[in-house]
Image 1: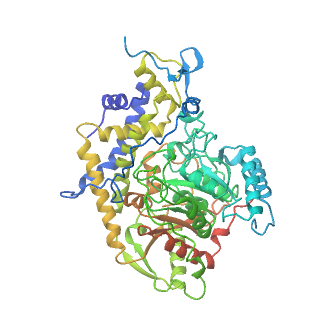
Image 2: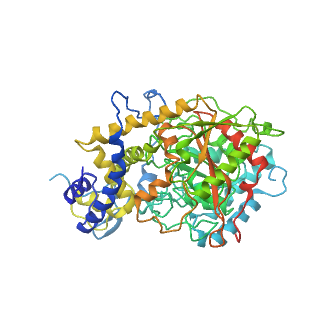
Image 3: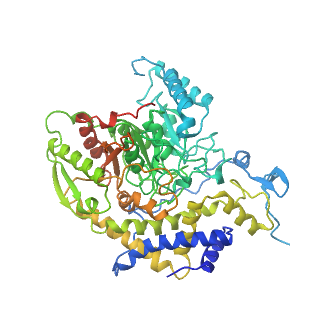
Amino acid sequence: MALNITDIKRIAHLARLEISDQEATATLTKLTGILGLIEQMQAVDTTGITPMSHSQDVTQRLRDDVVTAINQRESFQANAPVLGNGSAEKAVDSGLYLVPKVIE
Amino acid sequence: MLAKKEISSVEMTQTFLDRIHQHNPTINAYIALDADKTLAQAKAADARIASGTAEPLTGIPFAQKDIFCAKGWQTTCGSKMLANFVAPYDAHVITQFDNAGAVNLGKTNMDEFAMGSSNETSYFGGVKNPWDFDRVPGGSSGGSAAAVAARLCAAATGTDTGGSIRQPASLCGFTGLKPTYGLVSRYGMIAFASSLDQAGPMAKSAEDCALMMNVMTGFDERDSTSLNRPKEDYTRGLDKMVGNQPLKGLRIGLPKEYFADGLDDNVAKVVQEAIAEYRKLGAETVDISLPNSQLSIPVYYVLAPAEASSNLSRYDGVRYGHRAAEYDDLMDMYMKSRAEGFGAEVKRRILIGTYVLSAGYYDAYYLKAQQIRRLIADDFTQAFKQCDVIMGPTAPSTAFKAGEKADDPVAMYLQDVYTIATNLAGLPGMSIPAGFSPSIDGKRLPVGLQLMGNYFDEARMLDVAHAYQQVTDWHLAMPEGI
């Protein structure tokens, strides 16, 4: 199926990537080329073939339901991004991460 | 040398640090260095050697691909998204090297999130191929590749999702091995396509790779796909690769699809010469077919981006990574942070992945690709009934010039035409130096021979590579002027 600019913008929104009109146009050309490559698959008859998601036939391991992770909040929060919107502080407060208000 | 105490680890490490100081500004192989940390490890290694508890890798200085989290080290995966990320914990691979007493020289440059075949998608700039500074080292493990080739480390780690260890090994002229999927834990290794990603050694020789495999492999419960198998000694057969015809009885499969159109003549010639050498070593060759191998690129460019689009959804600018400087609401923060933090190739793959997984297209793309993936894996199952190891070219060409393919993703993707199938099947693959192309602009360029083995057959592949390296010296060749 041929893609158009509207498709690119819809996909970019689903992927949570802001995209300008100019970028969308350039992306359309490149993605069309890549999808052309992918289209070669359609010539293959795969009726009845079991999809392969993994190379090894293994099942998910279970472990005892015990606490294994230790609290490393401080070291993890050392990597917090800068808050932005004029603030050069880290986006943390009292052990929590700061994001724009989502509940009125 | 370390065991005989001819040189201390500190002296050896300092020699490499000096070489890095001299050459890295040009080559750009390393993107994070910390001499204090490195030398502290070397000192500890010397103490361990003195105490008589050294292991084979104790005191040896390695370069670590910047995809592995190493506690206290900047760990960026080649991306602006993680430019300020300091890993709070160690990847399993890093822990294994630390426990062996190895020294970490620094973190190496790579294509952003391991998406690329030339190292040109790195946020930290391209890497020069030590054999010709106008050319790329391959990718995605381009920094590790250049560091090994330019002798800016004893050896290095890499990861290989579609050829990212083997293609640079071919383009830079050294030995690289992608193990069977599940042998090396992915814990702390930043995820690209989780069903394909596998870490492995990048070193001068098969012997060095075998020693590294002994350290890197092993069960780790923190990786849900880590395989619980008995530990192997990958060096166990190397000593037997001597004398007349050490490979007598070995059947080498030559897939006709790997010698068809699209293969550079100079590469084909070198590969044929290497195979002739193998016949002299006693091996016999068998013509085989991998009929679905030409589908591996289309299948890969559905599955890998699909997995990537899911894996990379974690980068939202909330808890770590890049956050946009200005934003309105939460959605705007996500959209801007991701748009600014990711480079063009990463965005393309996220978009492809999102598209093929989106409602209405899942069956036509994702499911179809998974079905063909099985056909590709089945081809290998059939082939290994006829032969013990498969050989062919690693990459379709020698190193290309920087910028030559940077604007054409499809041309770039074709670099992995011979390597991707083993990732899809989960099989081990290897590239060893097999010779050089005729000089271009006065520079000769390395050519790699690819070895593909059956599941868990790495020890035999290393033996086969070692046998060749006992009678040839391509793996000892060094670029001039470095």
